[in-house]
Every structure is written in structure tokens, then in C-alpha cells.
Image (cartoon, rainbow, N blue to C red):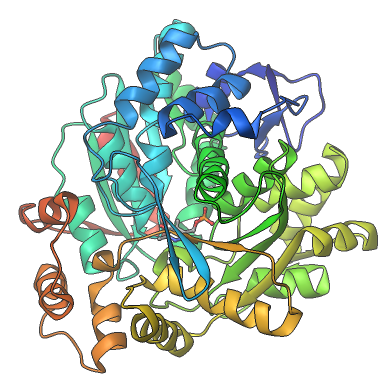
Length: 495
Ligand SMILES: *Cc1c(COP(=O)(O)O)cnc(C)c1O
């Protein structure tokens, strides 16, 4: 299978290993399959598969340049003992909805699902392409990608991870996960600015051709671990299928019955994987796009205008504090019938004018496929409290955004379709907010002490991965201006 860019014509094509190594297309577009696969996934047959077996099936569909043996090894290593749950993901029913727990991996958030696998895909891709450059994974993070990427790439030969995160914009626990993780090939640096500043500068560095040349002379090459990388997106398709099949197995739905997925959204990678699952034949009625106070997507679905010129809020769901949702580009590419000229123009407008408006036809398609809504910080805390009182079940703030938006949607639309709320983080990853929501009190001290305080309130056993987090060592922050990112990078690489 070949890949192309959302912003370039069909003359430029790559195979999957090349697209994974490269991450982002040179003109700034995202890689998508040249012809979207049409596999006949037999949901009945999926019923007998483990998570790992299903992952192999889905990956083989998109990454056919990897051998079955290679994929098998990659999947088994990615979804092994580093997970607290042998099933990898779990599904729980509470307050009449299903919660798909994707946070049982090493950094307690859903990004582990893809970021345990991406480094191994990349390592194998380097072998397949006989690539003689080392890969620099350059990543902007609003908190969760950084830790998950560092955890996934730690110790991987021929790779170096450099993470930029907004100073003061990530939680104490996220900070600990990034800076407490020691490895020769791992660097995390704070910038004075928000996530979008970090992401915009990372994109600029990627597209700086002089710099790319300089790297090449030094046998170095950039790639991305953000969900812009197709190698990160595809593994996320798996849990949509897996959760559907579990609901069938548990007798909650029948095969073929449509369900909704409600997704706490930031960069639009998670929910896009849901859209791809639907394209691959999974019976999905609505994808519910849930945002926090940074509700640029809610407005977009309502008006058809994407306008990033607005106040940026740092909220209690930091992984969703994003104004430019990169993966929306892949959805629009699809809805514009793969017209890369149209996409190049829209994305250019976003860069130059700060906004764009989609055509009425595309707007109509968007509203058929998606519902959208947002939650304020207070609504997030109220929702954590509501679900706990209803069912003694604890949500993290990101999941609570989706849970709240789902409740609102169900009340307003009277849609009774069974709904899976994608649960993206463990409550212990954001203990300060969760503790406050449950008790009305502030924690005595942020970070690890807050984890312990929340735990003694909840009186439950801590999972192995939460315990590992508590035991990570001390750390120090390095802080730079956003304008210094490129120079800092050159310093780190010593070129
Ligand atoms: C990254 C993240 C999200 C947002 O996912 P996107 O793919 O960026 O839309 C939501 N919740 C948590 C906990 C995350 O880490």
C-alpha cells in the first residue's frame, strides 16, 4: 500500500515504512493511504481474537510492507507485560454508558497504545528501508505525548527523542513522567509559550530545508511521534473494533448494531481513528467530538468555520488544550473527496488568516458523521463527582469532558444508541483535579503526594504502573524561549 500527502498531488507517493520514518510530508501535509483499504473484517471472527491478534490484523491491512512475522513481533512486544491488564484495554459499564479504559499502559494515558508500538514500527522501518540515518523524534506535547513517546523510545537504537512542552502547561505528574525518565536518547525541554507555540515551531523546524540538509550531512533525520505520524494513528483503530466486539460478546449489543463513540479530543487523532474504523466497516452511528473550554472544534462543527484566533485556556484537561487540531486535515481531505488542492488552500488560509470555512456540502457531511460539544472546568469537576456518586467510578478530567458532553448530547438529541466513552487517562494522572472534584478540598501537595492522598480517599489498590510512577526519581526543568527551539536542538545534537 502506498501513501500520499493531503496537500500534494499523487505524483508523490511513499510506502508505509518511508511514511512512518518521515512522519510529515515536506510541504506540511499529512500522509494518508493513496487508496483507502477496503478489507472485509468479519466481526464474528473478531469475537475470538485477543487484542494482540486484532492489532496484527488491522496493522497488516495498512502496513503491508512489513512481514507478518515483523508485525507479530512488534505487536507482542508493544502489548506485553508493561501493561497492567493482560487484555490491554478494558470496558466498564457505568451510569448507562460504557467506558473504554485505554490507560493501563506505562504512562497511564491512551497515548501508550500507539506510542508503545510506533518506536518498534520505526525501528523495523529503518531496517526495511536500510536507512543509514539516525532518527530524531521531534515532538511538541501538551503533556501526555511527551512521556508516552519517551517511554516507548527509551533505549531504542538509532533514535533520539526531543520533546518540547509548554512551561507551566503540563501537570506535575506528567512533568515527573517526562523528566524522571532517564535515558541517553531522551530529552524534554520547557518553552515559554503554549502548546500551539510548541507545535507551530516544531512544524517550522521540520519544514526548514536548510536544517534538514544539515542533518542529512550528519546522518540524521527528523521524524514525528505526534498523531500526525500515520504509524501512530493506525494502532488506534484497533480499540474501536476491540471494544465493539467485547460489547457483542457480553451480550450488550448484537453484531451489526450501530453504536456511538464519544471521544475527548485535542489534536483529533483519537477520534480520527474512530472515523477510520467506521470507514473500515465498523457500525458506528455518531462520533461525538468532546472538547474542553478550548472549544474551537465545537464551533467548527456548528458553523463550518474553523477559527483559531481566540483566547487560549489552560484547563484541568491539559492534553486537550489545543487550538489547531492537526488531524482534522485528514478528515477534511476525505470529505473533500481527496482533493489535495482544496486542502492546501484551506490549510494555507489557516496559516495566513487564522481561519477557514468549509463548503456547505462538507459541512453537511460533518454533521451527519459527528456530534460535538464542550465542557467547562466546573462542568468537568461536577461530572467526576456525579459519576462517582452514581456508581463509585472515578473519571479523570479528560474522560469527564467526554462523559459530560455525552450526557448533554443524549438529553438534547434523545439519541438512545449505546455509547462508548473513550477513557483516555487514569484518574491518578490528574490527582489534584480529581481529588478536588470528589471532596471539594485542595490536595495538600501536588504530584506524587496528591496521588497518595487521592488513593487513601478512594481506598483501592494502586496498579503496578501507578506505583512505578511514584517511585521515579527527581528531576530538573530546562526552560527556553519558543524562538530558541531550533538553536537548542542544534546544541543537543551537537551539530
Ligand atoms: C492526547 C490526549 C487526548 C486527546 O487526544 P487527541 O488524539 O489529541 O485528540 C485526550 N485525553 C488524554 C488523556 C490525552 O492524553
